[in-house]
Image (cartoon, rainbow, N blue to C red; front, side):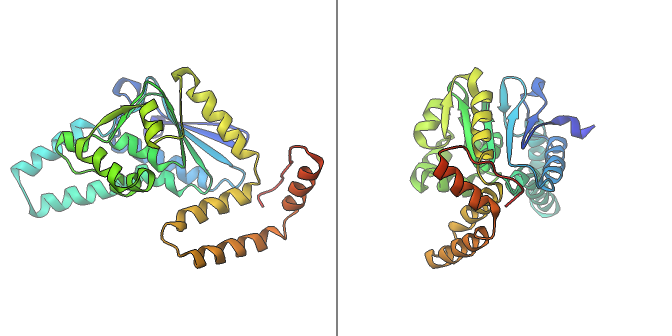
Length: 271
């Protein structure tokens, strides 16, 4: 079954999704994309969920797009350029992106635990998460140009927002691969740690996030998502409206009490 390509584990308010095709280094197939999208739909309806961790089984996060699929489409395109075949390929790729980038639809924060190599579209899925913890010796990069194909999976949108337009252009034009430590220096990942520590560090970060007021965290994610296209005045209106809602929440009173008493807050519900 397609669902077996993405495993789901739940521990309290934190869920972990795992790409599960180790023999192929978690290559991105249509079946895996459909499995991920199904898991995302399931988790998006869970109001008690506070954080989702995304990782890969085996020694890779994801080695990228399925090369057999790409080659098959390339051969069809060379044999019948333009017209109906080109349009079919355009539709297929656009739908394919949407399956994997559905991770951005989760209302709660996401953490990519990049346990191993994340290449091309596979790295794009990690970039689509809110935060990234990577193995220091993992190989990470967007090698589209080295394969002879235009960047996809949102690479040209996400990368400039993370590292700036000049650095994004350099990485995309060259298809350069960096290790986890280099990715941390570039700002591609939040932190690079030893491979054996990736899972535990991602889990610790997820639990730290889960300790914050859940409704506030979800609203903050929405505000961050719209900030790139918003004027400051619009963003101030959004912040004022959200804080007005918080004034009606028992969780704000709990947070204030915990601060005064120098203890960890005990937030309840979803506000």
